[in-house]
Image (cartoon, rainbow, N blue to C red):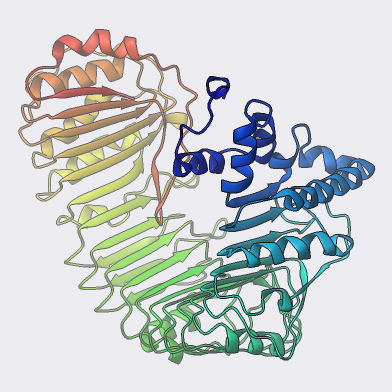
Length: 574
């Protein structure tokens, strides 16, 4: 910033506005001492107003405020004063967005009201009032009286497109009119009443996204909207079997997340365009109308502890005639399970729970159009009939008793891509299995050697030898013990392998010798990549965060392999 100390008006407004958008309010105050011109300009050109603890103060954290009530009250008062003073001197003609993220309440109503009024008057398109004291981020829990938000503040506005209200007492006047262009509405920690919803939906004639997050309602709800496309009802507690009726002819996706430990609300869904449905809870209410899901193509079930085979799955596959993608995550299998559907394309059964010392139940999958299948959980007996299956993720390494089962993989000779968790002791078995795979193009192996610490990279060469059509290999090794291996592997060659990724514990003589064999004898190799993260796919679109706890030295790898890299091949060290 000091480089621009003598700058007057050399920068165009568009660049200044961009610079100001990247600076916090406290930093903007600092640059005011460097340039009077910038002091005037940022008050005119900064259009995204963000008021939170980091923006307003240099020296406080929420951890400190939790431990000292008096300190919190003092900082809260200063926060409101600074916000009010900032808006009093704000000279810009346009405000694009307003965001407040700090615990405020009823006693700060005047400051908040003036902020919203000024934002609306200057064309704000987005307003977020994140003023709760009990969210995961703040967690102050000071029992602050709720701010009373009146929709009168938003009357006759056509600019607002996004509104997020948190821990407010909402007042909807009878003659309210406004929010004609609102697209997204999020209510979080709000007491919801039917009259309020009815008034909102009658005014928000272009509403597309609606979320109720951890809200309370003591009576039945009707959500009626001809424009709604995406609906989320999450962590809303059930008090007395309150019904939720949804009438939304253009609804495309619906996520329902029951409050932890409770049965879900009875749901009556009339949404003929609905294609994505997600349900999380210990049990699906018997009053959930599966008949309203006839056109759903994607369903995800989370954390169900009821017997899926008894009621849920039979109804699911009977009523949802267009179903193509099913995810069953963190559920408990209490009996044998059969999944039969001719249209099913993608099946994920991941993070499955189970009971200790219970024989493995049988899971039968009959899906002639299934193209991808994922499983992670305790050992089960699988029978899979899926002639169109191309892609598989497999992990039964979740218990010490039955680690690294291959499940149905030996019978799936036609698959093209496989990702799995395995061990060195299982490599010989894999060599025999892969010898029958004629179409395998991509192989991803995660070898967790915590229970089998001597890793033989040359055993992976055995797999490559019998998988001559393989084009991509991704290998992640965790906790490898450094053991000097023989340098030569007589007879290894590969004609199709193009891309190799080595991750995890790779700065070892073992890994270097393995890479050297590939560089010498895989004649189509285009790129070999080294990375220190033990990042690996774990199912349902998720990856491990990837730890970086191994010794990793780029020069160690480069100096030992640079003379082996020839022709079109590239050595990449991340």
